Image (cartoon, rainbow over all chains, first blue to last red; front, side, top):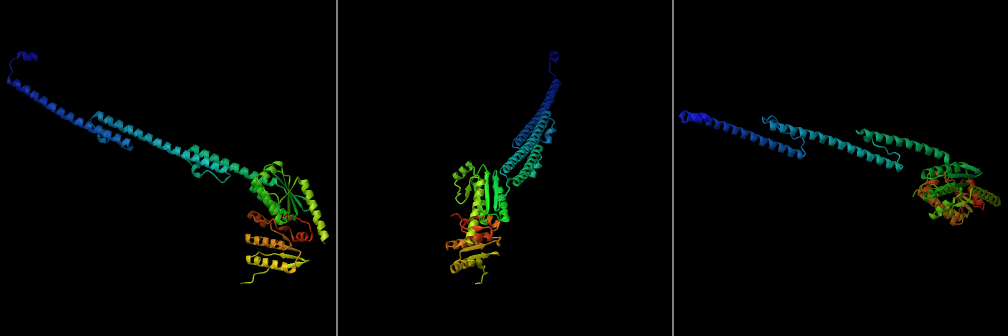
Length: 300
Length: 128
């Protein structure tokens, strides 16, 4: 060109026009390009603003926020790529949050279940043998929890069954009522006397007294090692009830430790005859019988 | 005022026997209390036996009234014995905490008679 310009020094009109056309064309071209740039930069700006909007939505907890289809199908590759990526990321985040939610729910279930287990166990310890883990926990979605609940319930069932059978056996074995002499019954008590057992003893003893019309009962507590206020109260009630029927009750075989406890806790035994051992008790009964017989003979 | 049923008071060898063979109402037992104390004053018996073998239910008022009759007779100088108490009543009285320790008791009427006629304390005797 410079060569051309060099060879043709003289600028001709045609040439000028040609140059002008070329310039005009270039200007048109520039203008078109400028428009195009303007449009694409606007689109970019809109896209970025939409992305920002979506991100804000996500941050506020709306995980369903999505970039619009318009943006995804945008001619600008950068923008459509960004949109796709953003959508995908939000999607993954949503999945993870769902998983976290599920995990949270199952953890809560587990915690509730375990707390119920503890509650039931503490009830059992308080001798409420009716306590069981609820069906809700037994059918819990969490397999481990359901298994644990079932295991605990099974164990309780087994133990309660065992306790019931043992109680029955103890009741049967523990307190025989013996006819020691004419008109003399003996009740050797062994072990611990709780409310249930004392009621059982009382009923059986009173039946026996009425049935045999015995005038004397010797309550032998050699086998009772521990006495507390409750036990003492049971014994006193037993003696009073027997006395109301018209039977004289004698307590024998009080252990030193038991005697100490009775005195220390201040049980009033003044209205009760207490003797050293069963032999002494029987001797006393025989003496009393002899005396009342003599008195009766004397009176007649 | 309606006439309440009366519990018969039987005299036997200088003793008085009150045999209750029916459930008592409040009125009847109140009347019995008056009758017994009046009769004691009139006939001056040696002993009094109240036989309650016919009662299988006793509320707190009735049991208190019967105890009162026993104590009234005792302080009037009559040897008093309560006989034939049902075992469930005995348990109930003990559980209620009714103080019957000052009342002498016997298993049956025969024994009660023995207790009155002898000087011996006998079964279930009072220790005061």
